[in-house]
Image 1 (tube, rainbow, N blue to C red):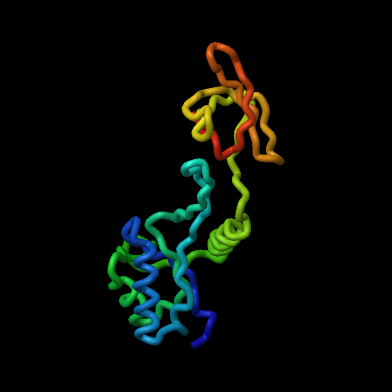
Image 2: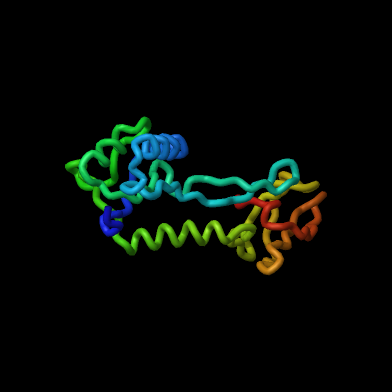
Length: 181
């Protein structure tokens, strides 16, 4: 089969069931031996970090909840096979229910974002600014509220002025120890 006919489509899935839909699609593709017609099934994920019991925990969440990307040649039965997979609602397309492929620019933007998020690794992009009120979510001052005095983006730390016993006290906290009010 010619690779030129492979295009990216967006499959609408039941929200929260994207991973199951990917498993079902992969299983159905290998069972029917149609790998040449459906080359990739992709769930765009983003990494984020959370503080749990004083430890930084990495987690992943779906970047586009309710959607799964698929690179396929929708010839004949393929569209029907995909639509009949459990938890698949259908394709993102026009009002008549026909699947419309993504434009190359859209595909490049989405896939570029996925690659960028995979390479990003540890970087945490939480823009805080001086004068903003934040709540301390970790450490001995957990629950205290204060105002940001300085932002150290290179170290990913903040200097926060917190009132302790009626006196303003500066705290140096990292981005993971505070949350926006």
